[in-house]
Image 1 (cartoon, protein in one colour):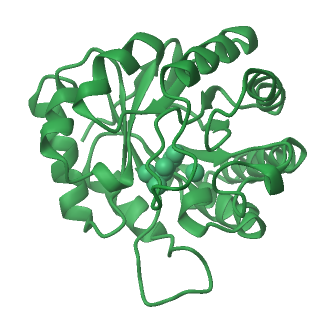
Image 2: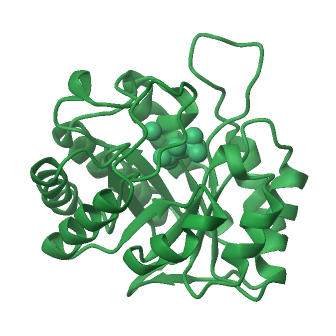
Length: 264
Ligand code: PEP
Ligand code: MN
């Protein structure tokens, strides 16, 4: 099987290792600009940030909607980074497409066939998260629904599966990420932030994912995680992100030097 490389406004995913980083949600302009600059300096190549947030509670911060998309685009442009953000609803797809370089389809919508079909008709790459209760098979089928619409620019993102275990928010299915990469031609990323929901597990899970041979990581970064409007327990600071990115690069270099990546 030939592996596919997906290009997001000049950034190639599937060749080498890519970091996507940024806040859980776009909160305000100043903060987003600062995060964009910091994660870029640390080696991120794509900026993330939610403008339409899929929150479990209707009383939680729901995102800034179009104002958030504007801020994200501006911050990305200022830092020289393309941006990825979530599309939650078919009615928002065209709007999000105007601002984003890559369209994220979130865990809660992985089974939403109309939305998968809508993104399949679009001319922007899709970041397809694994549903939190989806089997590997269902996740890959969801990707095929996008492809059936004509859009082959797909990147898979493993985040977790829900299990009986409760020490972390969810359980990172790293073997699922490896299998997805064997079974499908598309690049596979791991999101250790949503997978664990715990800031102190991000470093270990990032290193493990890199050693497992995935194509990159998506990590939530916020300068003051305790003040974040969403997912405060799992966001890490720019300095922590810089350290993790540097450690991951060291692992990758060591693996390359010992030809361990040939198998990945
Ligand atoms: C996100 O990445 O912003 C997000 C909400 O993730 P998930 O869909 O995996 O919960
Ligand atoms: Mn989040």
